[in-house]
Length: 324
Image (cartoon, rainbow, N blue to C red; front, side, top):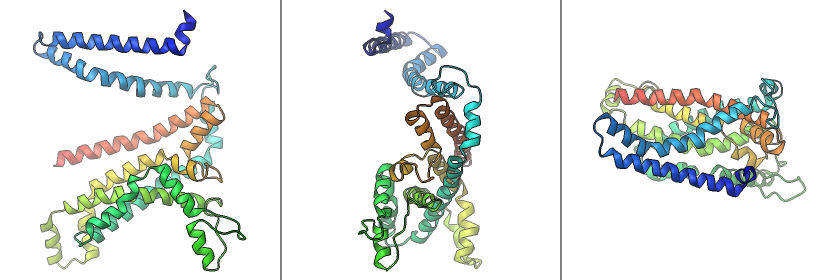
């Protein structure tokens, strides 16, 4: 009996039986809901329609989160309690990943937002506005892995005596200069990786901020122009304050995406040459080195860093709804 429960077929059968049991219970509740009245009927219908979603949320999100937190306090095989040893290791030996992640979180949101904002202002009301927006938004349609492969070929380096197949090094050598090791030389290689993320996220920033700029009341802009405000003064004293809620949403959303970045570094450098970030470290410790404790601790750290940004983002959106 024990062997059957731990076998793959046994677990599959138990999962199917559990699903069928939940389905039968929901059908019984839905059948009796029509016979109920008032608050009881509301609770019954909420159980029927919200129950499956809550069940899947608990199985796919809440349980893994709790298990990961528990494993972060265990040893590499999750067999004995290790206390805070895994977190102590991160404080002593995880500075490279923390430093790179901090650099990503600072530069990517700022770079993407500035590019998106300036681009939105420059093309606002122009004849080619739709085409210009499409060009900047196109990278958003590419996956992080696809973007990493594209830019890896852009940055490709070969020895000075060989023919350069990377676009940038081909241009550099055609001008008579030595080829550049874009992805191998630290710390500039991290900046070149960050540029890829900025290239992807600038389109998102442009779309949101462009819509916010168009929502700025025209009478305020006209009044400022009649008072003699220059384009620069209009930008900093009218446009920026008017779209501040959208700016906050864009910055926090890109920050959340940046904290979880994994695909770009893994695809372009394999997280080598001192380009590793927290997500790469989590993956390596969990699946390459087989240390569940440190890998889980890395995952918990990323989770803790993301929570304040998510809470702040939700509060800002609620404030915007209240103002409207």
